[in-house]
Amino acid sequence: MARSSIYRVPLRRRREGKTDYRARKALILSEKPRLVVRCSLKNTTVQIIVAKPHGDEVLASAHSRELANKYGWKAPAGNVPAAYLTGLLCGLKAKTKGVEEAVLDIGLAAPTKGARVFAALKGILDAGVEVPCSEEKFVVERIEGKHIAEYGKSLASNPEVYATRFSKYLAQKLSPEKLPEHFTKVKTNIINAFKKKGEKKA
Image (cartoon, rainbow, N blue to C red; front, side, top):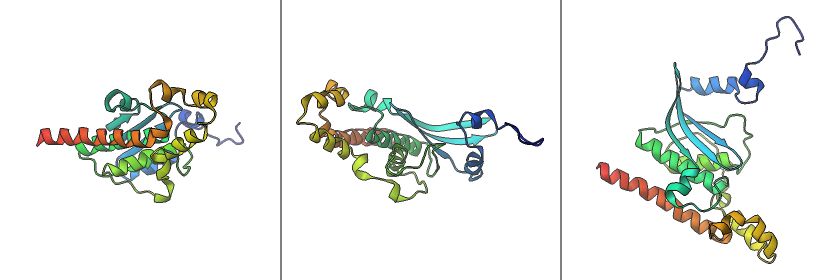
């Protein structure tokens, strides 16, 4: 509610909680591509974006659904390991287009240690794209899915709860206890796919 005659209504996207314009201005003034990570309950989207006078331009993009469609991912697309693999995939795509560095844009998400945002960031870094960050935000065990595997083991003695909690895993014939091994296999598939692309170009 207006408190004085100079009160100005915030821009629509600010009112809707979608855009922090002060942070966005700082990111654009850095004159570097923005690494935009957005997470929903079921998926993660990672993009490398540059600001242009006519609007934002996407240089590289990856969606967690690509993991299942192209690289054999059988686990849910909304967990931490999937976020890392999506970041890795986007990073490798960005490298093929000459992107060497970026600055992280997490929007209005809270910068919580071990969150999917930072798992995706770790994937980007492992792909070879430089992004300023603090290593303490990464939790390697979560990125590899070890926490999910341990949780699965803890529920093994209760078949009913186990079947309910991991129904999506079991529907794909993937044991949650084997998630770290599955993660490593899919990561290798993604890296090898881009190696083959590089060999063809050479």
